Image (cartoon, rainbow, N blue to C red; front, top):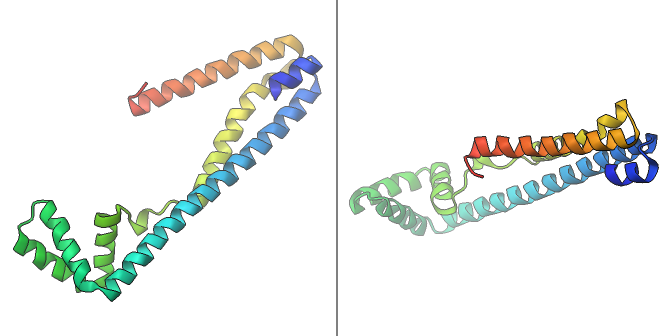
Length: 170
């Protein structure tokens, strides 16, 4: 948006208006998308836990057998695994947490937070979209366009370098 409007208007005030409008639109779009995706993911996890809770109430003996098998697969001897599973089934909430973790790989305590995802996506998108606009606050014309390009390229490089340092991946 910034490059297109800057090229069409030689970097006048329209660049700031278009850049800020684009930044706001992108931030709202990314934030709402992140919110909806995270909310859907959370709802799927909650539904999985509800199904597991129902299975535990309707067929506790099958769930006890499942738990014992999970522990046996981890190297616990059969008699100890069965004893441990029986103790867990006697405590339905503890059994549900254990089954959720072992069978589903989920934890109720670590459900994703849709608002956190929305705020994070909105702020990071707005920050990234603001960078190419900065020069147009201080100068205009081709000078602003060139500076905008340079700081955008440097910013992308720095983000990539930071990602490499944090993750250890290229």
